[in-house]
Length: 386
Length: 167
Image (cartoon, rainbow over all chains, first blue to last red; front, side, top):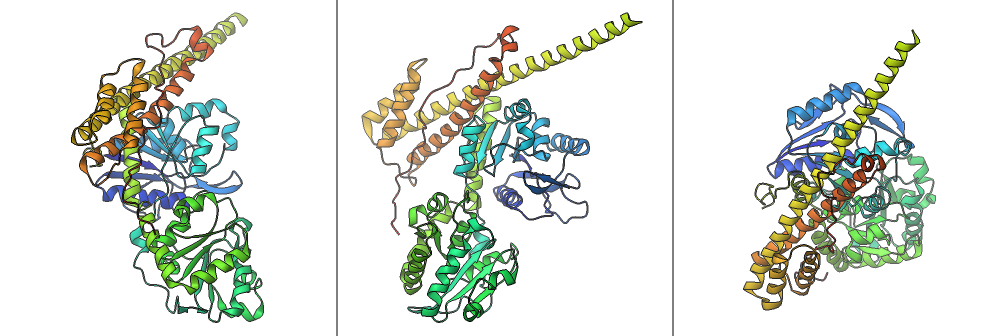
């Protein structure tokens, strides 16, 4: 199949949508399809061979944050040229409701268009001002994909249409079998040792870091050798300031970790803790921790319960309760057998999130979109589904 | 010469109005054609699933599944939605092992059918919305085609009852 994928955000800056697009493109290439990705990028940026640059992206304050996007007559001409040259069987746009390359591609497209909605945003400000434009955009889409149950709900309730829920994939191969960071995770035996981990913005309330801190502070005096490894954006002073002086040497702050170091960080842990209090639409980090073979302890949010298969593939604790988290941590750190059981179930769960598996499901949506456009049904082999 | 400006203005307005009407007519036509294509694709997937179910029924599970599949294959018009729902219910009562090719064919066909149904419903909705607009009705655009119809069946997804290992 000849597939054209449009990414609205610049590859110069890392981000969830950009990673999704790259992993999807690579998985589709791996399944033997022809893929071209159109994305904004600086002229001199180093890009993977399948990415075509649509020119420089301009930072634009949008929906409360700054997005680097490309929009305007020059971009329109480039999108049009890319579509004509590509002669694609199907066009796959991401986040088509932000004013970006994706939106331009939808407006220029002739054939089947598949759209993926990542965020659970209800309506962008620009579009709420122009209901007619929204309708014209939406009716050009042939099939829609939502990456989370929440994003799908928004589709159904606000955009007046259904969407197929296909979760974010995780490149299992990149996470499994990597080396932990030197000196980690150390020993872990009943009553002593063990390494807990947290990845993310520890200053953001809904990430729930204070809950993990409270559990750690309560547990550490009774458990010699217990350590905490934290990674993510933020200031080291702010982090260490949250802990009593005698515990600070048992907390290690890595700062931002690169995509390449993330698997190593996750493998350096006995337990990955996700104490989020809400707002998490999918729980990507949980699938990544599972792929790294690390046992997960997570708050009992809907999204987390789904990923952890109701608690079979990881321990759930009542959201926001530090005491319950402390008990769960004690139990799991003391019981290597239980950790191994959860990790084994995690391997099964994460197999469903592996990119080649997810990419096959996306291919089936492509097939449905193409069939709905010309009315003929393609056989499994042609669609690469066999 | 105020008279000339009148002519220019009127021509301009007339030009814009007709451009809008032509564009709208094209849009209605395009959406209706697409809904019809989606209906053909949906029809093909329904037949595929019923055929796969019939093959499976011949191998095992016997009469009830087989007759449900036959009835779904033969049903036309109004009866078809009920017949397809019956087949979905029958398929949900049997154990489908993904390792068995006949079962896998049914599972795959059901999955593709679920997507075709979803896409068809969305595209019919778009086409009906376009055709139902007051201006479109007034000028009777798209009257060369029948109103796109929904195909109202339950979600045909079947969950494979594989060996569920407990961790």
